[in-house]
Amino acid sequence: MTVSHSDMEGTLKELGCRTVHQVKKVTEYMLPGTKEPFYVHVENRCPQIIVRPAFHQAAPELCEIEGVRPKDPFYHNADMTRFPSEKHNGKTECHFGWAFEFDNTVALRSFIDGLVSVVKQSS
Image 1 (tube, rainbow, N blue to C red):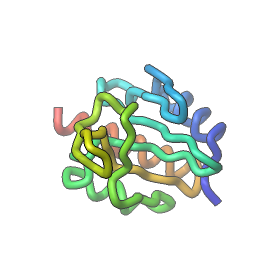
Image 2: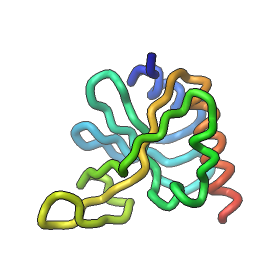
Image 3: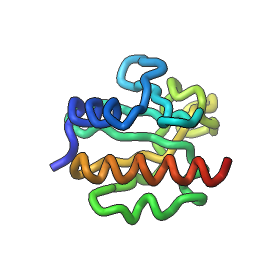
């Protein structure tokens, strides 16, 4: 069972993540106490959090959190404008990031806490 969209939204709000922008199925958030963006992609019943692709190498420990399921390869979406872009399947470049799904809200909370810690250490 994965975290529902409403549970994810509620948990992110409780943690102090703020919504910046919403387009179609992608919502841009900021981590609490930082200027680090991340995105929530909602499709079907499994919402995903997408972080910068640099975290793939800088924070592999995010994958080790119980209940966190990283998705590979990278997730591509033209609406994630704060992320880098690369040529994927089309003729033009598309923004991309590292996507995660969560088994429960405990895993989601641990993930956000770990991400904030990584961001603050690198600042």
